[in-house]
Image (cartoon, rainbow, N blue to C red; front, top):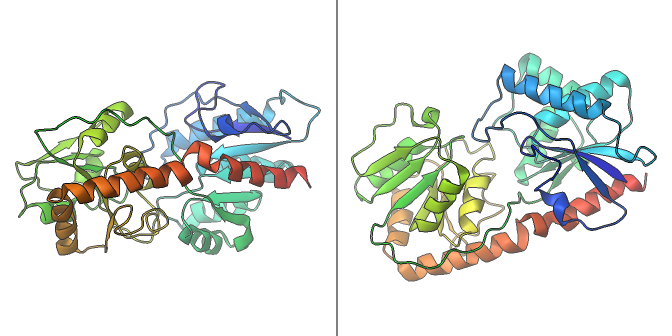
Length: 338
């Protein structure tokens, strides 16, 4: 079966994504390139972004498949593209399958947007979510059967471990923008005084007062974020909205470098981190607990090394493009049998 692949992060005909690791000859892939910038730190998409996604979907829909004689479908990443495709599908009474991989919203919404999302989503055949809690959340919100939703771990492209070097200037690193509780993090860190770098969009730092030992950086390229992750003693992902799945990309991309993490217990974290084994989980809003977890890792090098090593192994075994490729293959094969 032939699949048109749409992602906002594929500007060329090379996927650079999970299909690159699928070698099944019965499945072929054709990337419909994006021609717009994708800001993954945005929690919500504005009108301009929705226009970009709609243009991408329309272009893909009316493009003749590279293998026109084969049965074909659409494989997408992020919620906006499958929603746009599904609207076209409903309006044209098409039966072409749509697989919505990486269906993750910062939050659900009601009103006209909710009505439109429910109308369109009925034309999406499979939703792949990246936390088990999202199966119930989206099933109830979209009023769709639970069996249309599948949990598959979020995946990242595995990077090589950097050479081990002594870092005289130790620091804590916090990353990400969506649903972050940086005010709580600052309160936890203030009595400790550990040098800290927070990398986030400006909106996440509104009304947050920083003491001199905490530095805020914004607009960094991904490679610079990776460089900081490799150099940090530990990484903290503090979350404030426990109903939403957030932070997975940030902690997975740091865990793959063998760094220990402290993360808020939430729907997007408990499927990936085993407390005390691959990281430390802290209850939401627990300032004392967060402070204790940070201090515990800061003062125990053996614990940092043990958790960091286990974290990398966990990501490599279950949350890389290569690791989830067999599951994607399995999902796509369900349509070939129809």
